[in-house]
Image (tube, rainbow, N blue to C red; front, top):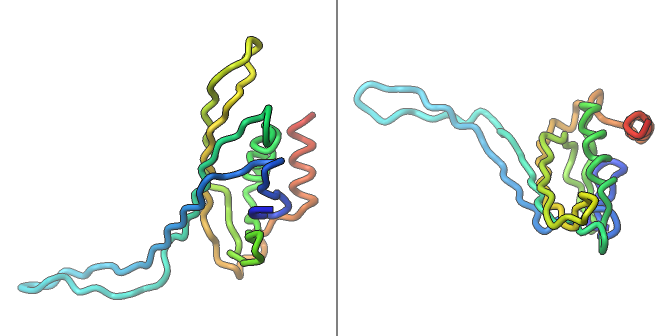
Length: 146
């Protein structure tokens, strides 16, 4: 296991990312002052973003169902706990976007290579009303398959 987002596990058999890019911002708004540089005040943490770019080779490793599962999880609008394979807990994250590029096609249009980028944003850990459950994810997945 590389990483778990809710009940979705990133691995070679599901969806392996090539990088984990994290960007954290802190807010320091400026107030204009006459005859001096703007004054800045720290008002708290800003956005915390994780981007997971990767390549999926359905013939060798991973499955396109994994991308469908992440889309269905995103459709719930819920936040998901993220835990690294090492046990490090990242907190609660929402799926902000998922993009994919399919190339190297078989005759029937099935791609041999799919590049993807998953973007996640952290929410406050005390917003437990937004946390998704395995049941919600399962129901969303079943609805998507029907």
